[in-house]
Length: 85
Image (cartoon, rainbow, N blue to C red; front, side, top):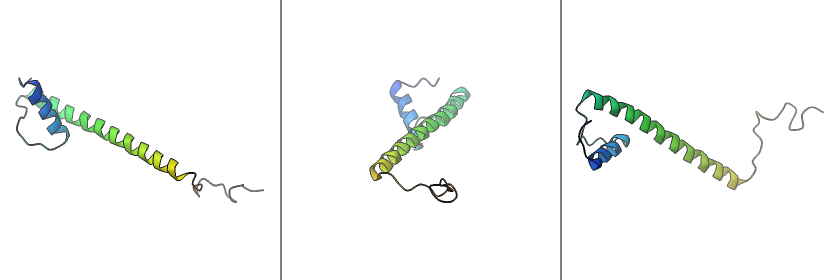
């Protein structure tokens, strides 16, 4: 839409998604501004999903390395771990 070459388009995409925003290239038409808004929201959402997945995996590995842990007190039935006898 803007007539940018591949390198300028990639540069703008990286600067926009990383929220650096140098302000060098910027969209000038209404259509490209709307596309950029959509692109940023979707791109940041994808980045957050990725970061969340990496963090969950890291937490799983950390808990596996620690070994079995004590049960959560909320999960234990009344009367102790064996229940009422």
